[in-house]
Length: 120
Image (cartoon, rainbow, N blue to C red; front, side, top):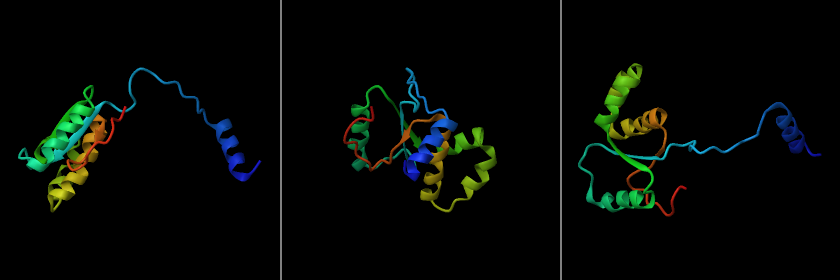
């Protein structure tokens, strides 16, 4: 038995790796996307529609930075001052997606991401 196999054997003894699938998904079937505001550039419309078409059983949630600010204000108030202090929309968007996923679960995809096949 090599060193890697020894560690794997020890892990199996120490930790329970049994996994029993259940009917509810571990990742909620929600696709989150966001933009600075509700005026989404036309170039992204077809890609957004494709996400919805490829995932008809999934919810598709669109967020603006103001929407996320409300989420942070209501659910993570200790971070609101930090969020408001970010100097650019990009900084806010980077943080915003983490708050959204932490609170609701699901999958975040940028507007310029094109789905090639469904998640499930």
